[in-house]
Length: 200
Image 1 (tube, rainbow, N blue to C red):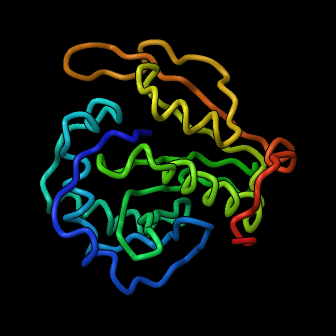
Image 2 (cartoon, rainbow, N blue to C red; image 1 turned 60 degrees about the vertical axis):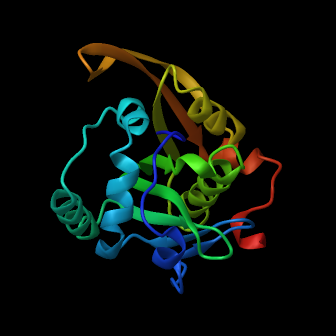
């Protein structure tokens, strides 16, 4: 999970006239499509994003193939985060969905110039409301590098509790990095004093 990422291309054109899958107060979520591969590739190729997500840059073709594969995965939902004017500002996903156990993981990535404006919290709140309000989820989890202060702050603002540290869980640039493990349970979400996405 990261709020630090580069950006490439004309963002507004990519997000223009997209049908929203889910709407919240300040952002909308549109299903990720293969046409978003170039935008996603630009975001993920940023060195800061690569560090915080523990990834390495891949080719645009590989990014397109990954999106195509993920679209066919019934256990995940990937969304482009759009502002009211249809500007794409990031990506959020609900992955590893286990309907029987009611569990899923959340991934979040924001474009560099869009962090620090509350878009990460708005998008996280929106996908959490989707998971608990429309899907039978009971437990959501997320991970972030322990040195990724913006991501840790977003998770805390959205009501997630840090459960612990996965020590040396990620290898990047020849060094091991710790991951902070967060969770949010349905009863905790029910007690959050904030508007739900469907009230927007």
